[in-house]
Image 1 (cartoon, rainbow over the protein chains, first blue to last red):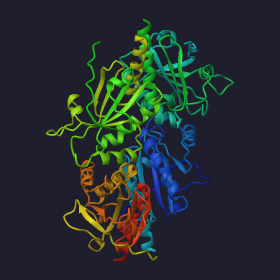
Image 2 (image 1 turned 180 degrees about the horizontal axis):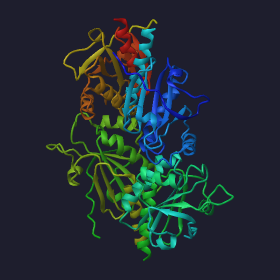
Image 3 (image 1 turned 180 degrees about the vertical axis):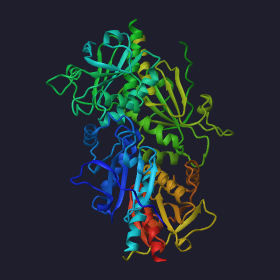
Image 4 (image 1 turned 60 degrees about the vertical axis):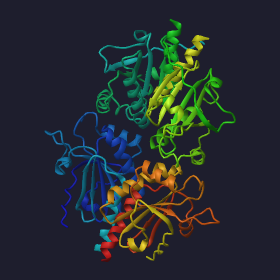
Length: 159
Length: 159
Length: 159
Length: 159
């Protein structure tokens, strides 16, 4: 099958990470990105717990979990200071990127490049940096596990 | 029984209310106060939904539901603008008071006067303005209903 | 207000009780009856846990919790032996009555006398043996607490 | 890797299936078996809903979901008639096998052959009939999805 190349991430700043991350650096790993806003109830209730679960399960493995804070409303409320407090209170320890804001647009850069509808959105990228899932709303753990299992096996088959 | 008089609320500003509220104005009603911080996970998961449920159930009745935003950590993150966004996103429509901050103390005024341990805390005040519950942590709906039922009946018995 | 007198319970056998119970014996207490069938999913998921919670909360108090097993379908499957195993597995320790079956009717006797629509049904009887709640489906803990609080206070007001 | 061949299923009777099933007939499919007892609370609360979810997700696919009713306690209560009522009430439509009872043993045959500790147990068998998971207790949906994704891919890799 022909899968679309995942667009690059346009990031203002990384939290919970000693270095700036990008898809080129992470290539060879499966990448699971939870796109969220810290004041989005569905993100807080479902997606952040799911992301933390996946991170715990695979953290010594070849699956990378990232958060992408893509603010498209209440920009004044969801700034970097607020996000840092949120990550501390919700015990989020995986790397979280602040989506690069645009001056004359309420949508941030990566959100536009990926043509996202809102938050939460789950993005999964395979080891060859192809976009394999882009799902708005809550995705069942069964589906996420299934896709990760498939992507892990592809790699073994190809190498 | 002799119950303690509820201390007055020291409030910086009221949101979701056209007028400033205080215990004297509300006297004659049962008052349920959910003390919270917008970035406190237990508040978001349990207390805000409980407060909304009680508000919906009793809003045409003589039970008043109030939120009290008592910030004692991450003060920069949980300011008025952030709180307004939070109330909008979580569809909180009952009145919410911002606990009056103190200049040289991380604890706000009402929190100190009531000697609260943290958030969430549930406060229930009877129709005579006595403090009838001050419970740190999550209180089961059964207990809250039981106390409201008791306080409603007291009133009828006394008048 | 004028409340209806609660019809008497027509019981084939009591489990978890050393003696046969009836409303006359229990008069003076608030009586909470969970009408259930052991193979009714809504009963197992919501009502049995609620009944256990109320029983734990009030067991040293003047609130009596009873189960009433009113079988109106799958009669062969939900017999006494099966019910005993169910009560053991679900750790139900409050008294449970087997509603008296009728020979030519799939509905048992008490269910008919109370004109119940199905299971789960929550019945609450006040200290004067009046029927104060008869609710088909799941009743929120807040409502149950509220009613118990009201009924407890009535008693105190009257005596 | 060398995986153990899955022992054959020793079945007294199949429900929800027009034909008797066995591993030889199902070979070439991934087989997910939920071992349960109808009066086991953990089975009812977690495993049956999980089994139904997997069945719905994969029913047009090459993943077969089976129930195995392995009764090792309360044998009189969990007979065929009771199980049929249970499957009806809980809307279980995938095939369910009654584990073959032994005359002088409270454990049924398949349970002994698979050396199971209790219920619920989740068994997963790959397309070559190897035993790939045998987990006592509740298995997270993420793990089940991951294993199914892996097993699906193995097949494609091998053919």
